Image (cartoon, rainbow, N blue to C red; front, top):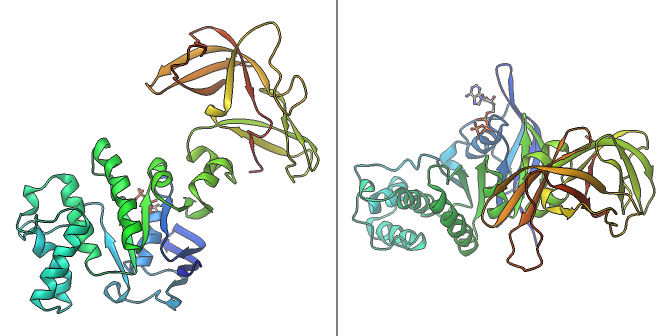
Length: 370
Ligand code: ATP
């Protein structure tokens, strides 16, 4: 059973003339690893800060556990925040750092120590209690900050770009550790990030924001496969966007006439008005590349001649596990294609200036109305 723990109800925040958060309504459930995602300046940090109590909404209500906490002081909310900068006290030992919040709450010495040691065990820093923060690596200091937030057993843990100060390898490792930790403690985690890979890898659900507005709330795979706008399709991963007119829209198929790639056939309806402008978004890994033989390939589930494009390879980037190709099509635009580098004997290779056919399945495009 999902139980709401956080509810933003028509929340707006304005700083003078700047509308940082614009009429956001959002429910986050107990036990979720939720991510607020969007480009710099989209309002995600402001939304998180309103949850922590560092900012008050200009309009609307912030509910925690069904109670209106819009104006409640930060220390009286059942939430705790881990900051981007980790904010550990350099002069205190790791153990004292972790126990600090409990001391402020008047928890007796023995219990403080026990709970701080427990929290350090949880973040795999058992035995590091006597050290000073400057004797720890960046990743370890990050865990100290986590332990310090977890020790008070908050109902909700807020994480502001928690991995941004770590190098790439450590960041990968901490992604897994944070998700494992969240599953173990069962506390609701809400993480702000501008890094879509991070959000997709860690969160159970994400909210994508742009210019203060909530664009879409969905699971990582739904955001990727079924974006609801060009903004989300483009922000989450890489995409080829083909603009066209919705020409046929039946329950079991649709046709979009595009300037760049001719008519696109879909094996499902679109529920848009025919004649309107739409965008077909096709992910690079969903496009197949074939040698340019005389006859174009036939695409499964589409009539002959649909969803096939003639092109010439203009650029390729070898990335070890995969290669990214840029293929110039009629009219000069470039289509991005990603192919895994398999070790199969029958895998075809493609090179610069090679003439190719591109094709994609009738179910591949996501059709966007805005
Ligand atoms: P970033 O990833 O760069 O931190 P963000 O998506 O978290 O960005 P916010 O920090 O929430 O965005 O800022 C949203 C908008 O509100 C921005 O235009 C920002 O300049 C503005 N803003 C945020 N805090 C204040 C403030 N205290 N005073 C004035 N404007 C602010």
